Image (tube, rainbow, N blue to C red; front, side):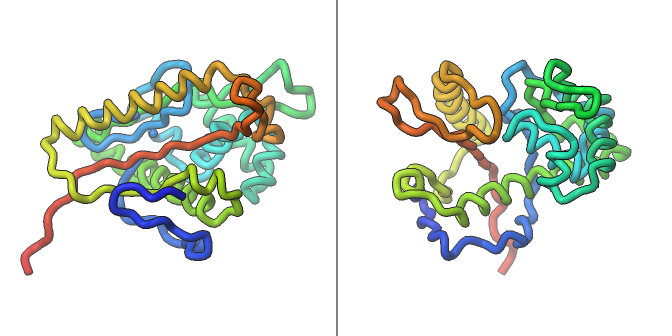
Length: 248
């Protein structure tokens, strides 16, 4: 990993244990006002979560299912159950629940009478905490959603740090932070917009490349890049103000 900012590279041998607890900080699915949560992996527009859709999604297993469908592509309930270590019937129930709330859809052209394939609806989910500030009935669902999203972010980084990568890919990745910025709220928002523009520029370039048919073909070669290896890449950004130290 290439360190950036004030962060030193994290050796694989020093990776956190897989069951290490997530930091006690909220997060969630595209950047917006207030503390917000965004999933920018989808390409079919953006859906702003309301109280009903939030309650439909805010369950740890449903969010894990949606994450796998987002990262690895379409799958059946039996495949997801094996990956998650869950009962197939339980996974099927949660899949139907996600479909009822419009987060996933059946891939009918691929399914059979015995096996149904499910895929994520290609649309980003956006949550703005300010929308729920005066809605105490949604506080439980909001808490579950934010906690699970942050755990997913944390677990992705933990998995990457602990995996065996060759020198080229290890040097290309980074886990970094910068701690010496002093910005106004407007400047912080503008910085996030600029960073998102950079990521979207690379996404546009990436969209011209053929997608892997399924998770078994994750790594592929690019003829346009001289046969260089192509792999899925996750970009996670957390930028937030911090309160100063309390009284000494």
